[in-house]
Image (cartoon, rainbow, N blue to C red; front, side, top):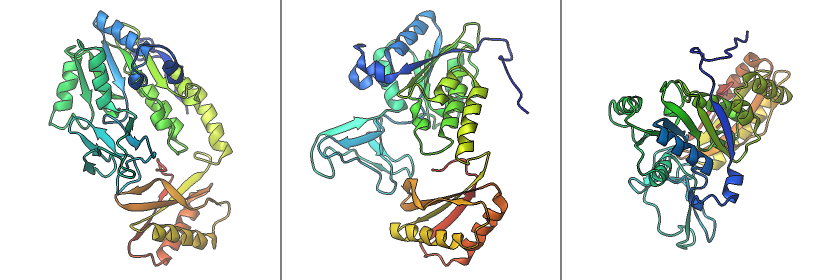
Length: 365
């Protein structure tokens, strides 16, 4: 049964959501430094200025920590990745370290390309640390705080920061998902979602759903007092259904189009998904194990099962382990799960290879 909540419990109006096309923003002569054009758009800067003049508060949301999220060489294109994980290392400027957000590895940023030796290093992407730096530069008079796992490490620090914000001792709160939901600040009239594409671009059939949920949750922080709130969603994909339906707070419209897509491709809730992952220190062993497992699974497979091909996981390496995945779909999950369990148990796996399976996983990463 669908229970509809057509208005807030206190009768307040839902915030007005505006979508900012960052492609157009960068083409304009906005007066924003090119390096910062994708951090704070001109319209968001103007809205923040208006709130500061009125004594109202702003929340800026970006679900990524650090200063720059990627480092590459302008000469050869080499990207600096973690040695144990297939992911770019993030620059944390506060301690001048490249940090892997998967395994926690840390290293000094190189002064030249590790591959070709060219000193032309290019930084891209941004996280909460860079947002804080840009906001301090644009609004030097503003009182602000950053809320992420890098800054909220002391006991009660998060509680104390939120208490300050509630007492109007801070003008701007910058944060990750830690501030996305459950907070009620009546003086917050502006919320900025600085990069709505982060979750949307993940190779996961639930990526759009998560983006829709997150946008609705974050938008709900604005306009909880007497003044109607505004939300600015910055994106390079403004016509994405998840963004457009979230803009209008239209859950039923979004659910209808998302369910139709799931039906066409036999994804939950129209079918069950079982994800098998092999991981091991040696890439060839992990891959060969999954190829062998697929051949064994094909023998005696329950009726109606659709089995894909083994492939590298979206995060192909983590904590020094190479990862390969096999996706299976079926209307009836119990016979399939039993079959996978029995086949895996019957196999003699290489010593350094582990095989796990997940029924209806929440993430395909």
